Image 1: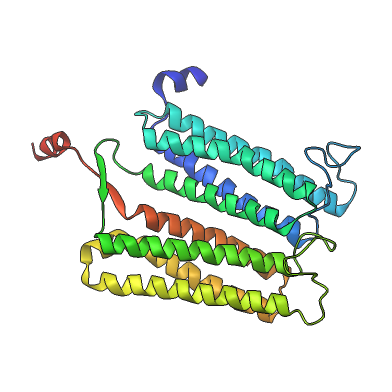
Image 2: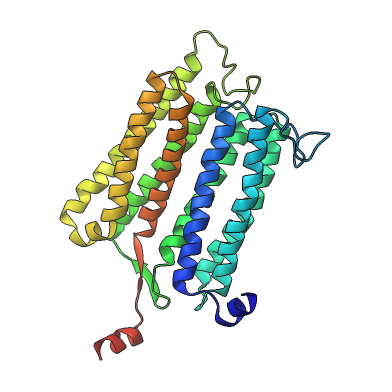
Length: 316
C-alpha cells in the first residue's frame, strides 16, 4: 500500500474522499468537546496530558470518563487530519494550494491540543475556552476550503467568479458571521454551561440572582445575528440582477440562509426553555455548520480558469 502511494499517489477522487472524512471528524469533535462542557465534565480530568496526577487514563467516574473519551477521540481526529495532509502531498498531480491547506490542518490539531491543555491548567477560564472554539472553527474553515478546492481543475489560474461588489458583500457577511460566533461564545462563557460548577464566568458568577449579565450578553448576540442575517439578505437582493453571480453563489448562499434560520429558531427556543443541554448541543452543531457554509460561500467567489492550451484542446 505504501509503495503504491509513493509510486502512483492518490487520485483526485481518493483525495476528495479523505477530505470529507477529515471534515467530518473535525466537526464531530467540536460537538463532542461541547458535550464535555454541557455535562459539567470540563474538569473531569484536572491535568494534561495525564488525566490527573496519578493516572494517564482515568474512567473511575462519569465526568472523568466523558472527558477521557473526548481526549481519545482527538487521536482519531489527528489520524484523519494527518492522512489528509499526506494525501495532499502524495496527490497526483500535486497542487500547492492543497498542500498548504494540508499543512495548516496538520499544524492546527496539535495547536488545538495545546490550547486544550491551557484550558485545563487555567481551570476552564472562559477566554481560553473561547479561543479553543475559535481555533476549531478555523480548522473547519480550512477543511471546507480544501474540500471545495479539491473539485477545481488542476491547471489554470484562479480568477474572480463574481463582480467586485458581490465579493465585498460576501466578505462582509463572513466578518459578521465570525463576530456572531465569537459573541455566542461569550454567551456560553457567561451562562450555566461553563464546563464545571466552579468554573469562572465572564462578567461574574453564574449564581448571580438577577442574571443581568447573561441577559444583556444574549441580547447583544441576538442583535449581531440579526445584522448578519440582514447582510445575507442584502446579498441575496443584489444577486437578483446578476445572474452569473447568482449561479456561482446560489448553492452556498441557500445553505447559509437555511442553516441560519434553523440556528436562529434553535437559539430562541433554547433561551426560552432555560438552556437545555440537548438544544445547546444542537446550537453548537449549527454554529459549526454555519462556519462551513460561510467558508463554502467565500470559496465560491473565485474559480480556476482553464489555461489557453486547455481551451484550445477542448475546441479540437
